[in-house]
Length: 125
Image 1 (cartoon, rainbow, N blue to C red):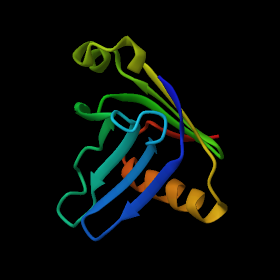
Image 2 (cartoon, rainbow, N blue to C red):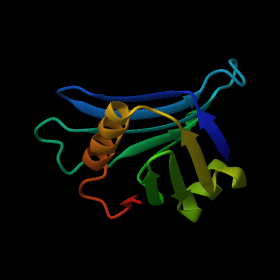
Image 3 (cartoon, rainbow, N blue to C red):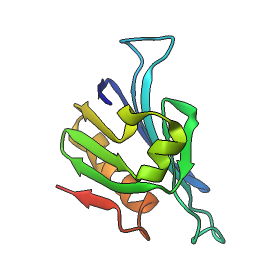
């Protein structure tokens, strides 16, 4: 799966860190979405990250081989067991291109670091 995100939203509050990449313009009824989240409140330090592709039916706690962030893209590879669970071979690898200013990019990077901080899947190129 590949798309260009025109909406990129990093968001962290006192309980959760979230990042969403979305293309609401190409198909407003079924937008392409890639999102990540993880509880960050005290007592949940050992919790797993959660990700979704398009909607909750393609969501999972854990199950990513890698998440590679560069200045204008993010690439994700799912573990085979998750691809089989989703029954969507197109979701084996998800590539999202985006164009954001430096402030938003730094916020995306910081939030992803926080989401994946105890997991060996996040890479920065």
